[in-house]
Image (cartoon, rainbow, N blue to C red):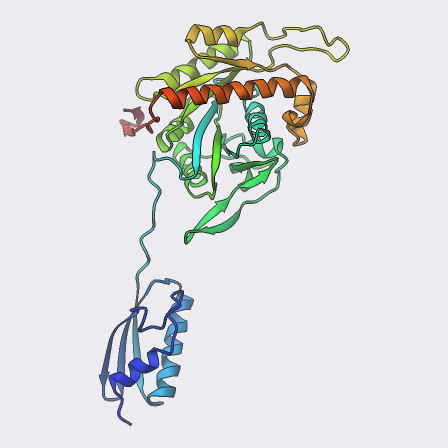
Length: 375
């Protein structure tokens, strides 16, 4: 039997190209067919790079040509794999679907920044906003505990042909945290570049969907993670959390100064004073200023930034955080009302910022002589 090119082409039209939904000829996968007597050479280009897909096509070609054309045909299949160009997100560009990004910061650890972040997110959700939290505290992620998400693992979802992480959701708040990918007793011992890479994956490889607010729970201090965040994202504004204590206020002042630095210029929406006073249940009219009085308020006035309100030192806040039930969920309690007021003030200041100021530009960072330089 004479083997003809037309006969081979007709046979190839009966094979579906991997992932295409069309046959090998319609999809353009077959680039060339050459017949030399009983030898058939077929050049293919596939977009599916898996070895399994390539082997499957080779076997199907062998079977169909032997069946439809000539059982004695000697077939050679040359397959070239061309992967579609990966669409990398552009650093410094807004994330599609997210309206406003707020960084929650503290100069000092232990002032309740993560507690404020989780309760702020829940309060926003209760007001009807769609909210997400990026737990950027790489070395001490606590948001999963505070929102009853310990042990959860994000699933992979397909978004426009790309595999994305699906945030964990509870109380109307979507969350991604490095805590989802580590064991509770596992220490994260990473250098700055590794931490920055993990953060970028949680930012850009996540299926956040449509959000009114994305809150970023920053680690304490001013360091690599903070620079990575302001480099990667145009942050609408920052909120600084502090207690009234002088040692905390000194570090909060540095945090404000970081955002206000000439080459960073992230608007500071204001200062929240946490653990402002203690009121024992048996003496509801008494206020005890354990860590000092109105220190954060005075700092805000001194730095010419808004004061967003004060949150009392209440045992139920700690208990609620430990069991993953944010205190903002407690209806008609002093802490819930205080949190609601603070949240309303944050939204109000954000509206003013978005109305009166141009969009924040992501910071360009270079490395010179082993040191990070902001320009």
